[in-house]
Length: 65
Image (cartoon, rainbow, N blue to C red):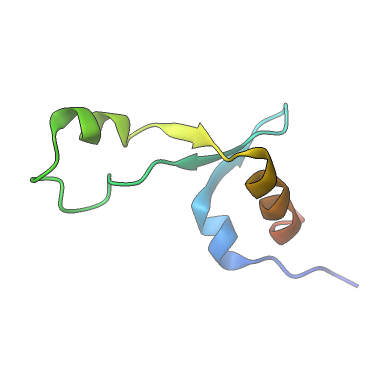
């Protein structure tokens, strides 16, 4: 039986690295950037890894990625 993929989890992750880290984009980059400092906007453009517990749960939600 095939497992269902959680579509909301797929939209949040960027990729899974070869070492097993699950990467996602930082928040505060999408809209309303005029009130944010340049440093916040620059830092929001980066990708960071989920912590171990969240990464484990994400892998269960996205079995075929």
